[in-house]
Length: 320
Ligand code: PEP
Ligand code: MG
Image (cartoon, rainbow, N blue to C red; front, side, top):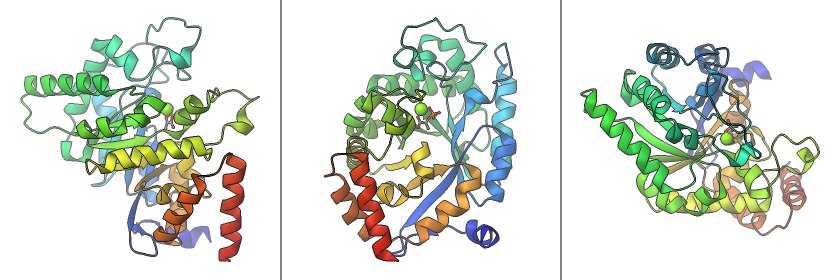
């Protein structure tokens, strides 16, 4: 079965009613980019750059950052790469950054907040990204966006750096939706971003106020919680008002039970672990989008993740 999945993996995934869904991969380096291509990924949906230099105790030079990211683009054989700027802080330690100790690291300096607090670090990464070729295959993604001001500050910085570098082209710029405020303001963000990518790991953590690393809460930390589903729905609705697409790059996209839900809510890109690309594509190909949409409306009315999962299971057994 795995072999047959693999043979079909490279083809684009369409739902039974003919809607194309992009299935991309979450990676940390060029070796994984090559693995993603082997598994039939349509591109890279999330490169977590904080892990690109996890082995280092000092900041990588711009040339080194550039080389590592160019190697990823080169491994993709014409596909696009969404590269996220450093998501330092919170649960992700970056040894070479002097981050202050905090009582609540998840609510402190992390993601784009770190970048804006340390402009030299962000500039060096942005310059490395802007020097990649071809820029048309690069999309820059900003982590932990809270509201529009952060996007506008980074957009202005990119414009300034690109001008200094004599570039006429700008890569697409997207924001992660992983904080409830960003989901609530998705319409405003979509007016200024080229695309939105939902980080369901953090969106679940912050919506439910449950630490994503807490073993005691692990069983309750379910992205199929109706509160999270409503925020995803709101994000898609906001994005549509400006004709932007919405992807999901959190672990939820790799949960085959959640795939019909995400499609039903209007998500058109899923980014998953490279090895799971064939299975997620196969799952998409068995779905009727019209049916997913109808089901999603019912799921939004549930009051617990258990109720959501029970309804999904019922529908699943009904189909077979
Ligand atoms: C997420 O929060 O869902 C996400 C994709 O980012 P990370 O897991 O790297 O925090
Ligand atoms: Mg995150």
